[in-house]
Amino acid sequence: MRTAPWFARVGLAAAASFAVLGGQAAEVEFAAFDKEGKPLPNVIVSAMPTTGAPPASGAKTEVVGQKGWEFTPYVTAVRVGSKVQFPNLDRTTHHVKSFSPAKEFEFFLAADKGASPVIEFDKAGAVVVYCTLHDWMRAYVYIVDTPWFAKAAETGMGKLTDLPNGTYKLTAWHPDLGSFGTPLTQTVTLKDGAAKVKFDFALVPRKPRMPKVLPQA
Ligand SMILES: [Cu+2]
Image (tube, rainbow, N blue to C red; front, side, top):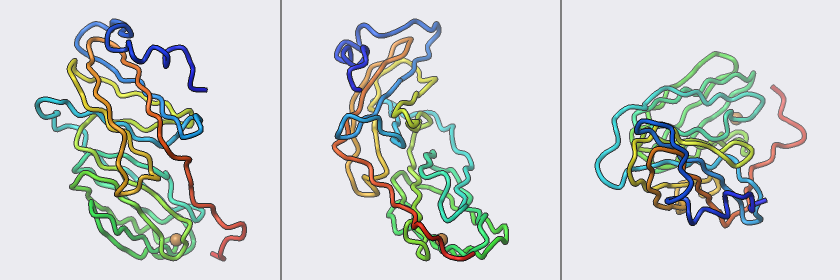
């Protein structure tokens, strides 16, 4: 539940919760909860310094496959400038489409051809990826303009590492907010250690259900 000891101390975090790591590196440990107080997986937390620009590093190539009539992984976070491959690993055709302002795209992926279109994400935002042939298939790509971000595990917890000391605006987004919902934010000052923060979302997660009987391959 939400009353693990350090949550109660969040108000004192800036003053009291730093364990000295040495050097100038700090961390943010976060815990996300839904409206009912249950741990909320798939939340993306990112950190943007309140002054100055973050370093340019962090763009890379990720993979969002289609396998067993599902996108996998469900949620992917990347830095602006990153690429995502969309290989079809099923013996069926998928029609992959995004209407999101951060990146619109559309392609048919024929069955089992190993075809793997690559999309470059050049703008921050949340992209909802659909398959128009299988309406329960859904993936999310969340694009941030900072190298410091992480996805919450099944426990609702995650960690940002290697942040220089300083003050940051933290942004927490969940896929049910889609492209247009407003993420949660808070400001944290880091100094040589781990700060612990908590995000309480006013939602109960809804993931589209696969049908009990799948279409024939
Ligand atoms: Cu499909």
